[in-house]
Image (cartoon, rainbow, N blue to C red):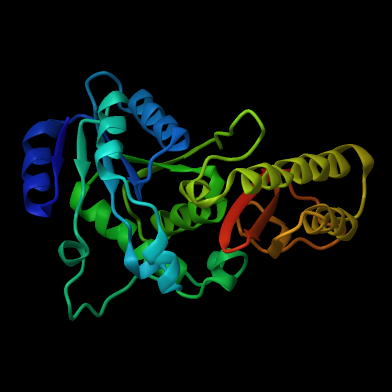
Length: 283
């Protein structure tokens, strides 16, 4: 495995190494865990033995609307590089912010529909930052394929729309959520939870599974399902609900009673004190 912090060096290396091979990009912000390593394993499956897997590790400052959140985001580069090597990554790109962004930068990439709800509504500018950095990574790496996790389902949907609308010749793959035995989805932010908060956070998976049962087997109204999930989460001390929504899985727009959409998506975002976690389930 080779690691580069320079755009020019990575481009040069990939140009000589690709030779018509599949190049699969896995963008990350580091603080890697089993969810990320499953993405690397999936990327290797797509690339095949002869293809190239490229991971980026970059805490992207322009997708944070809260400076404290950016400052406290976990960073563990040495451990991250070891995990990349253990899971078959060929190249790791670890740029500094000044490498990725000129001081007088004036161009961004915006999406105006899918990003209007859920995390896009509660984190202004977040998905503009995501779309901008992902576009830059696509231009730098020039992959044939890219892998994103379904834990951030809205991000995956937005990237797919961006690639479609801008005619970007990259195949986008969505990887399933990886969970601990207690159901908690792996997240870099889990490192900021206390042991008690980690136990409390398992309410998200329990509430989503109950919503799935109510939707599929009991025929409850969308309003009732959402209300039941909100009550289950609110019963846990120290929680603050950002959103609980049932949306169209492709457009991210809230569903109305009587809409017959498959798959629909229930998405939640909840603060455990000051740590914000997201989770979802296809209905």
